[in-house]
Amino acid sequence: MKRISGVVARFGTSIFSEMSALAQATGAINLGQGFPDFDPPAELLAAACCAIEDGHNQYAMSHGEPVLRQALAEHAARWYGQTLDPDTNVCVTCGASEALWCALRAIADPGDEVIVLEPTFDVYTPDVLMVGARPVPVVLEPPHFRIDPERIAAACTDRTRAIIINTPHNPTGRVFSQQELSAIAELCIRADLIAICDEVYEHIVFDPHRHIRLATLDGMQERTITISSGAKTFSATGWKCGWALGPEPLITAIGRVHQFTTFASATPFHYAVAHGLRLPDQFFAELRQQYTRRQAILLEALAETPLRVLEPEGAYYVVADIEQVANGRSGYQWCRWLTETIGVAAIPLEVFYHDPCYGRSLVRFAFCKREETLRRAAARLGDLATLAIP
Image 1 (cartoon, rainbow, N blue to C red):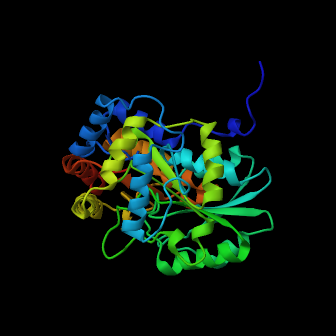
Image 2 (tube, helix red, strand yellow):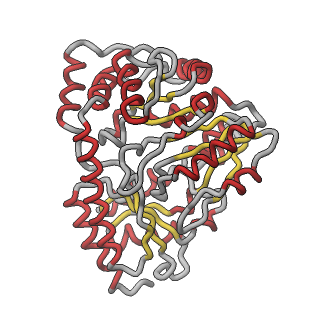
Image 3 (cartoon, rainbow, N blue to C red):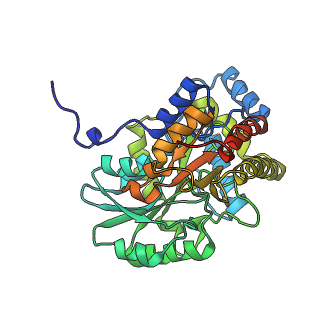
């Protein structure tokens, strides 16, 4: 039997698949994987159905249906003051994850280096490895997880090709500040790096914080690939409708990779997401208000436990320090115990580091759930205050 790739042999099962399966098997409330337990807005469902009924059921244009590319250009102008050409600065993909893969495949050669800020969403490092490049981790220190530009600069070599930024940040909930992003911009310009900026949580930001698009900073428009999707904003993770925005040479290269990866994504959802992007400001304000309420339910519940909670600035996750209740367990072991005994699933942060020792006492809870679901989870988490933990 022929062996599998040495790179792929290093990968195990995604922690999200593992913990979701455990939650389902034990009847636990799944606050692990970041998918909502409610539907997208009714008018987006209607727009998707209408697109199907109108015959938009065959392959989309490889880089995206014109209606969606135009909506993305309008969205960039409306929220960030960007000017994008829908024909040359936009490529629609099968979710943000494919956009990331295509971006890395488009810019990195074997032996190149890509800086990854840890803790990091678990797709980034495997994607860097699969294109033959070398991930270079730079750790953001808890509890504040601030960007240290000197540490990043020290990680750069003459082989460094790019840096991956995620803001609002998964898993920590940080929304990187103007000062932090300006430091990244200065470094990218000085070292001639491409910035790949994952902004899928761009519309889930809590007051007084605000999301800043890295590409809008001086000198960054021509060296930034902005990645996002409709999954988080419109509660439609299963639609897998993402995109990459950037300068024409980079988007052309991404489109070439995309055409030989998936060629196109699901056509009806192009029309539905285009409709969503054009919703009035009230929709986006209510989205933030809804997530502020959900966040408050989870924060209040965790405050009644021995866990030390790190309040998020954006995205829909809360990180907690379990050191006082872990009894020597790693975050992974504790999350399995929590799922099986308390009936609430969470994700250990140790899987988001190249060295799991960094995140050993940290876990992540998702609050992208109905308020009723979060209250049920809160009741179960209350047992942490009184239960004798073996």
